Length: 298
Image 1 (cartoon, rainbow, N blue to C red):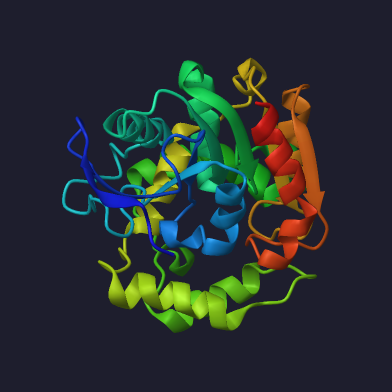
Image 2 (cartoon, helix red, strand yellow; image 1 turned 45 degrees about the vertical axis):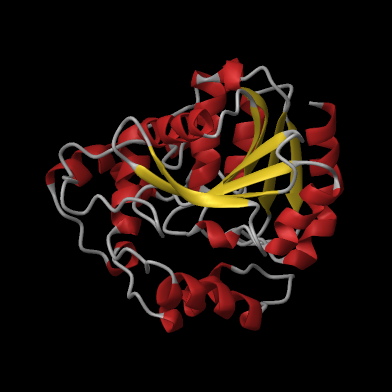
């Protein structure tokens, strides 16, 4: 789809963020924040168009270390990683650049974590928050029954700060084939795996844009680890708060959604049966009407 505006925003912190806007800029703005190792292209036309049809103005952007935005490979170090708080600050600087005083937030996975931090720390700039397939604390020992995880979760900040973790999951192959295989695994149990559409998005990101940063996943994952828990802060969110999660999510188990909703009594929770850690368009009917209501009453 063709953006109404696009370009590079050079922020006060020297980060360059690539952004695209869609729709009438006089309409209520919605900031779309994507997740780990994923370019903003993942907010597809099918996801954005219903927002435009309901008179919203949409902004999607590539997070630091991904897509056309700044890659920090030369300056990043595991002993002083950037955090989700830093990434939230990127979003605020982008809003300033675009002269937007207040926005609705839709954040997916890591983007949901960033959205939570924005709603906590910059509540005066946020009209509402929708957190999709996300968590208040990915390494919450109360949400696992595995003794190995209970043992290692508290050690993760120390381990990632002092050792380079070489697990292949954190260092993906930058090929269309690898990412297609990954998305098939993430797809869940109910909705069709749309290989043709996903291949277009992945190919565009890897072959036709700036490319896919081979260190994005590791460096953004370290940001999640370094940022710790938002459990004590989630109750402070006092704006409309919608939580959407798939029951078959293999990356962020659905327990995280129930925990997140329990922390904020005014939140609304939607569980999409069989949805994994992707947003297939066939799943939209199960949450989009409520999402539009959520945005409209905010």
